[in-house]
Length: 249
Image (cartoon, rainbow, N blue to C red; front, top):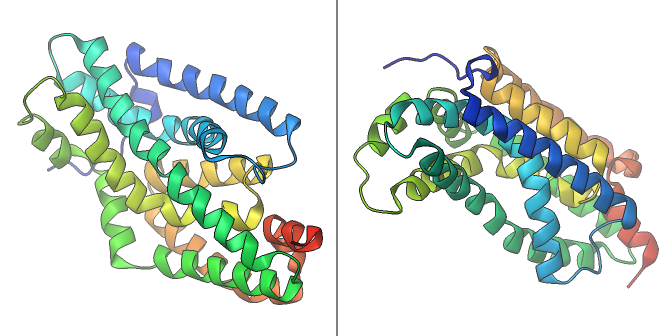
C-alpha cells in the first residue's frame, strides 16, 4: 500500500473546482462574520447554516487531494460521482453543526456571568483538545487521511446509486475523528473568530498534507495543554467564553 501523502499539486481539473468553492465559502463566511459579533443568539437552523459555510471553507482544501485520487479511480459519470463524494463528505461536517450548537449553548451557559467558570470551561476544552491530539485514535484517523489508498480500494466495492455519497461520508467520518477536537476550540475562541478559522484551517491542511503532519499534530496537542494552563492567568486566550461571562446571564 502506498504511503504517499495526498498533494494539492496533483489535483484534477474537476477537483480544482473544490478550491474555488472553498474560496466562495470563505467570502460568505467573512461577510457573515461582519454582520454579527458571533453566533450567540442564533437559532439552530441559522447556526447550522453558518457552520456549514465555515466547514466548507475550512475543510474543502484538505479533502481536495483525496477527492482527486477518488476521481481518478472512477471511469464513468466522473463529475457527477465526484459531486456525490464531496457531498457525502460535507454532509458529515454539516451534521456536526447540531451537536456543536448544543455544546456551545451548554458551555456558554456555564460560563455566563461568572469569569471563574469561563476560565474553568476554557481550560477543560483546551485540555481535552490537547489530550486527544496525542491519542492513538487521533493518529489512526490522521494516518487514514494522509494515506487513503486502502480506503479508496474499499470504496471500489461499494454499489448502488448512493455509493459515492457513502464513500464521501465514510472518509468524512475519519476526517471528523481526526479534527473534531480542533473544531471544539471554536467554543473557546469564538465561533465567528476569523483569525481562529484561518489558523485552524491551516493546522488541518498541514496535518493532512505536509510530510511532517503527524509531528505537527502532536505539537498542537502539547500547545493546547500549555494553553489549558496559561488561560488561568490569561483569560483573554478564551474570548468566546469570557465574552459570554462579561455579558452575564
